[in-house]
Image (tube, rainbow, N blue to C red; front, side, top):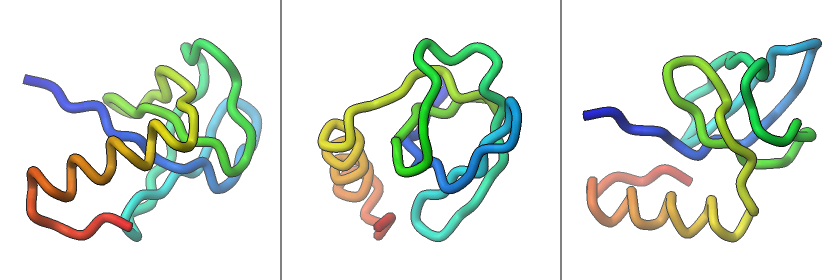
Length: 75
């Protein structure tokens, strides 16, 4: 089973973005994303790639569900 996680874009350099959720930062590739994000946008991240840009409200709601289901604090 695979899990894709919504993460907030903190910076973009070329085709790479630094993303963050719950204090965890990663660098992801933007080569295959459906709609190029901007800093402050949320993206779904899977296997080191941003695969879809998310509406901020949708991303925050998804993170709330993760928190509830995993019983952890992400924000």
